Image (cartoon, rainbow, N blue to C red; front, side, top):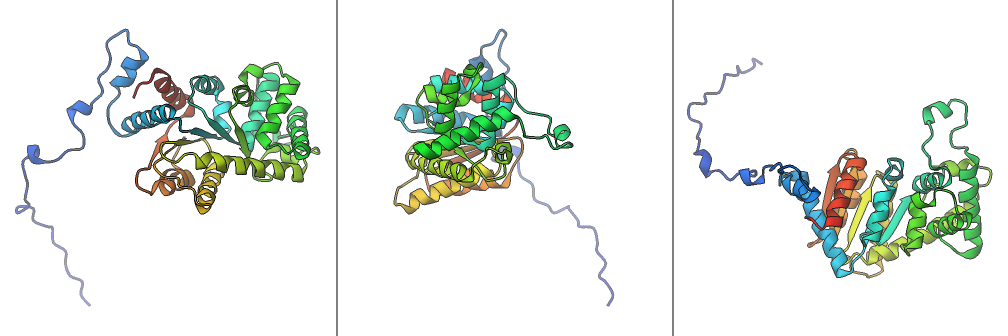
Length: 318
């Protein structure tokens, strides 16, 4: 069968219209307005273009400010990277300003926080230590966390509470840099959510699976209680956890709704280096399908975005 010859399309009859009649998404009013020098942070923040991520960030700041005004919780679910890039002082300041009502961490977050409290340092060179099998076997890290969990098993504590109590008892030299201790001192609940085998302390001789599982399950139940309170104005932030905490949040939300509690009209946001499937679906999209809820996704470095968000909240700028 002979193929039909394709001819170039004639554009002479294409219909056009006047540019001014078109509806446009970007107007000159949305452009950046660099502030006069010297400038304050408020001047700088107000100067950012009212487009895309800036617009979303301002909306999120408004939602968090409103949540604090209404007495609704702002839940911070965080991976370890915030601690590893030195953001604990910002998080502590946000606690003092009333912008943190609940903290959820993965196991790595606790590990890095404990190491900073003990020696003022953390984050080993994995590529190097993996070669000789020494990766993850710092003695003090495993002993402190695993002994805390053994005590938790006897006392009926959750993971977060147990490690906080252990740190309070040990009084490590860099306590002022511990997110866990700061939360404990201010009466802010901390939950820890683990998957067996993901954390270096699971490979230590002191690990106890029963203690680990029991403490983390108690924390999940406490976390569910916090998620229940998001209804009508609460805010849920997932920062730097691409898999574990988004899954934990999704399960918490469904069990809360399964039990008959209404969780609607709340806000979620995810912050990470790149777009990930689970945070996009399990934090930003699926939970906010009901009318009145909103979800935002911010891509960028935590060490830049979090201080920007924090300062806007502290100064009350939206």
